Length: 251
Image 1 (cartoon, rainbow, N blue to C red):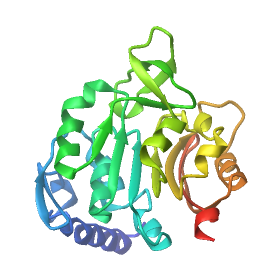
Image 2 (cartoon, helix red, strand yellow; image 1 turned 180 degrees about the horizontal axis):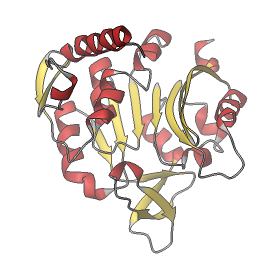
Image 3 (tube, rainbow, N blue to C red; image 1 turned 60 degrees about the vertical axis):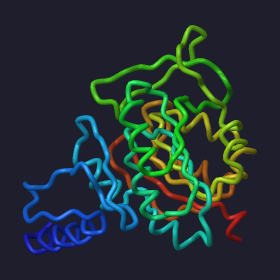
Image 4 (cartoon, rainbow, N blue to C red; image 1 turned 120 degrees about the vertical axis):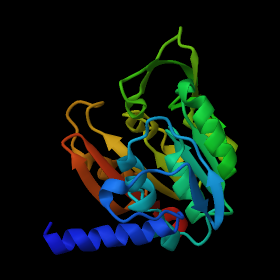
């Protein structure tokens, strides 16, 4: 990126920050404030050691393509966030869809205090459950960063694993499904019938969880169950972002 491209990019980011009631002059001064402007109303929010890049990526740069999905979908009534973490996507979803019912799923109960607070400020509901292909019990595999926590099915696990079917039953038709479940997304894609109730999906996928797959496999799997890819970004050798819409709904 050239000097001038960098300056223009920085200016655009500052303009997008204004929507959240944020003002700063230099990139070095950027920090996530303890309150944000959400649909014109100032909301206090809590974060635990959250990297500012995560906020910039999701809320400012719209890595989950909520603006694109807003153009594709006539009406968004229901949004489900699988892998809610501290609620960053909930912020972006509420900012873009003020009237939608937004539900988050997060298996890491260590995030309960901060996520409960943010969800209540944003008018969202949260279930502290891991979303799996079938109902089960799971164990948490905690990492240095809470963003990288994974789950493993275990009869002695202390966390509830809730089937994707049950998530669909609770929500009804899901207008936008966001997935960031550290590799579990591949198993959920096996429940083809449940995906018939999802109008659009935006997800971060991980290749390390399934040997022998590559970046094109996620696109192929979604196309095979009736989704049209609207955006696909390769983030690293084993990670990518993808957004798609269900052709059966959009015709």
